[in-house]
Length: 139
Image (tube, rainbow, N blue to C red; front, side, top):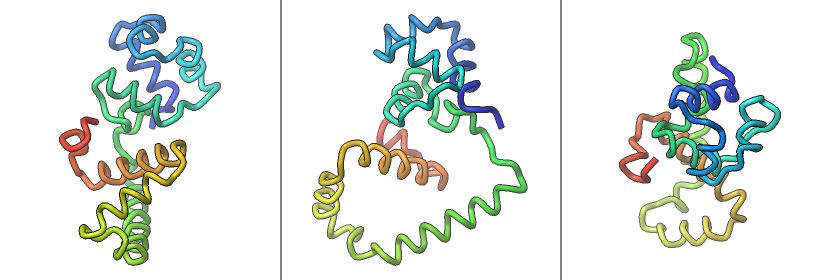
């Protein structure tokens, strides 16, 4: 698997773009982009979403995840399924379709930083279950 920083740089170079060009079209400073590409810092989820949209790719593709190693895949799926099952059992009442408004209020009450992280995690879970989040969310 390719490292996230190499993948971020590779997408920019494959598109024939300079750091300045990406900055001009995304608002992300070329200093931050450069630090991410060198692996000196890790971009936040909001920046990853911005870059993925800009390049027209998924978040997984942005950070170099194309496939899991065959040996790791069953363990990852099993672990995810256990977590989802536990989560579903604990929060089934809250996440019931009839409680949509209450769930939205709960989500709104979370600090914006945590909300972005939770939302990014949720999108990743949905994508791992082959749900087309682009059709629903636009990415």
